[in-house]
Structure formats: C-alpha cells, structure tokens
Length: 137
Image 1 (cartoon, rainbow, N blue to C red):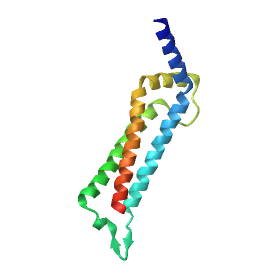
Image 2: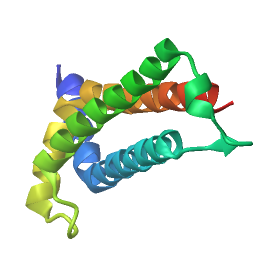
Image 3: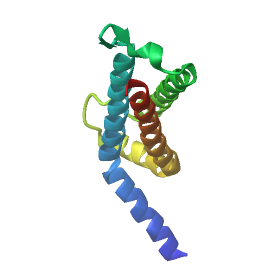
C-alpha cells in the first residue's frame, strides 16, 4: 500500500517536471499537422497540367472524395487537439510552478487521451498523404 502510494507520488512529480516539454511536443505535432493539411490542400487545389491536360479530371470521383474525407478527418483531429492543448497553456511563455503542477496533474489524468491524439494525428496524416499521392500520380 505504501509502495503504491509512493509510486503515484513519483509519477505525479515526473508528470509535473515534464509538463512543459509534453505540452510543447503536442503543440509541435499539432503545428506539423496544420502544415501538412495546408500542403495537401495546396497540392490538390493547384491545377497541374501536362500538355494542357488537368490531372484532377483523370482521378476517379470516389478517390477524390476519399481524399477530401481524409482532409476533413485531419481538420477534425486538428481542432480536437488544439482545444485540448489550449486548455492547459497558451504557449506564449514558460509555465510557472503552479501551471506546471496543474498541467502535470491533467496530463497524468489524460495520458490515454494524449497517446490517442498522437496516434490519431499520425494515422490521419498518413491517410491524407497516401490518398494525395494516389490522386497526383
């Protein structure tokens, strides 16, 4: 019983000490996802012609819709992660001890959510790029 309580205290202290870095890492992935979405949208919306032929008309409509769906999914995940991260810190300055303690507690409590966000962002980004590659090749 004492060992279990001690483990929880150590986990909490570690969570507090790494809170800033964990929020920054999540913010960086969040920014990376936004950049990726913008890149894919720009690539797909740019009229690419080869000898006067627009490639977008050669892509199957279902495939085009799949790509648009992947972009919508990425935007939805982007919004969820943004809402989650902005609850804790606005990213403008370093966190005070109180903020780190508060954020550390919530990050410990929402550890599964954070892992899911990382996984969902990576999977959505991969899906979006895969469908873009199929559409543009």
